[in-house]
Length: 241
Image 1 (spheres, rainbow, N blue to C red):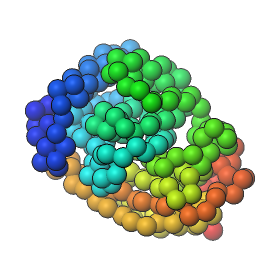
Image 2 (image 1 turned 180 degrees about the vertical axis):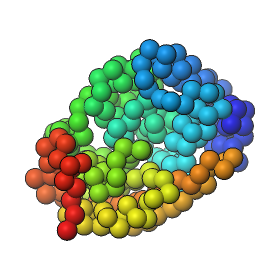
Image 3 (image 1 turned 120 degrees about the vertical axis):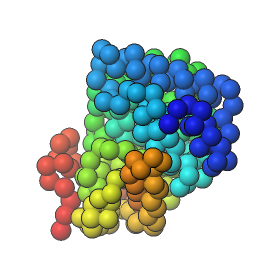
Image 4 (image 1 turned 90 degrees about the vertical axis):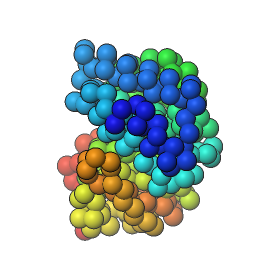
């Protein structure tokens, strides 16, 4: 997917990028590839692959939840890595107030430089483990939307993300083809952490690049204070019956 194809694919979804937004994606691609030469940010560096598997793939969230396209929502991206999906979402909808959580400080430093070069405001970068951030009163149960892409199995991810979602907010898990079986293993953790599965959506990437599945978990009650557990525990001992 070359840049022009990317713009056309978005336009087909009624997302018309202005010249500044197109330039921001060009800068993003350049910074990603150049920084990746000295820091392992991604294995995907070819232009057509970055535009498809990072930029377009991130923006599928706008297709499945149109609120993200226009509304002034607070969004927390857990384990964002090189800024996916939150930075592409922010470029398309500058009204979003973004918080990015990542455990690796060098990625946070990359994102800090990137945010400045893109001229983005209302972006907060948090260096820390999601388990620790979820206990912090500054962030606990503060966000309209929390999302995560390619971070962990859903029964682990729920404990990392649901504590950050405000009551009546939504956790949107971005998953691959195994979403249904992951959800079966995660039903108990959803209930324990104050969530309720309300929707599932699928989207097929262009060029036969696979299916993306989205699981929508609404926050219906406060997460008990003992969650999230200490760093590392959710992945070692996922919440299961």
